Image 1 (cartoon, rainbow, N blue to C red):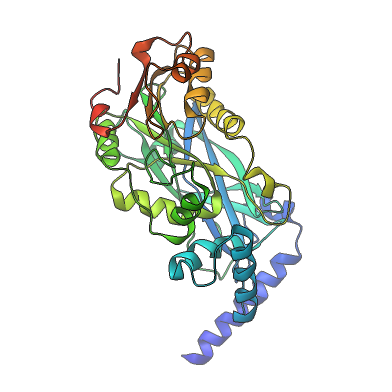
Image 2 (image 1 turned 90 degrees about the horizontal axis):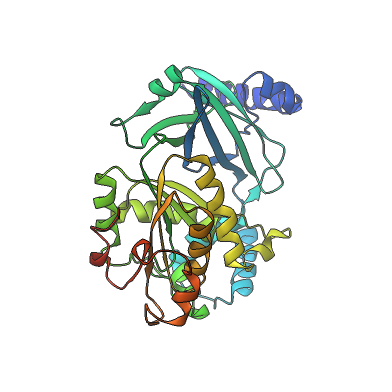
Length: 370
């Protein structure tokens, strides 16, 4: 038994070594992937949309190699602590778990393919930050076979990475195929559904890296109510993609509906490091607008908070996209009056019936449509 397992492992390593020598473009044409035996793949939930007589299915993920060696890991964790001002011993296991995805070796130039149903589709190659993106075209029948769930709502289709021969690991992913019409909720995360205290840098740091995440009371119940009425969800955050592995299980455990994720690209080794601290207004706008354009027949509800620039961003989007944005809800975390100068300016030319400032989730639970 042990000899057979050893032979199998040797065969797997030999196969992966041979595949690694082949050009990535050739492997992509074969519908295969150049995923090494010590590399891991994570897919992020996306939203598919109708395109012509078929569907466009975005695929987004990252491929990386975990860091080995306790001494190296301790050194990089120490660097991460200094970078973000975390004292030695603070956060314990929570900090270690949150920091780990920032300290991996991202894998560049890896050809990734995915298996949807019985077919394999090439996605593309990973960049320097390990991320890969691609869009797959599906016909009606292929999409129908992929999706589970009631008609008229977001149905989730499951897929997995194509691994090299001999590698039987499963890296799963999912995509929501949204109907052409319906309600889509674009929700901020920090201080909208998760307590972050963005305006206090020290508290933001602690709530992000040192403490267990805490949900904003009542928001999960409100979102479930909306989901029961057929709403689909898109979670947009300035948090880096490295926190997806903590955020997604947290939202699921708290009972928030499934949705696509839209986070920020961040890498310690390149200019994206500075993007983490860039203008939130510009980031939110360039992240939300593609969602609006992908689903021109749907109506949108935007949910955010007053801690940063959500009122200003949402107001500008509402003026530019009058038809699809039917509701804007802003959670008050700053204590500013709803009839004050800030909101009058932010929502200038946006009908009063389309926006609302709230403190309790109960105030918006039944107000998804005008």
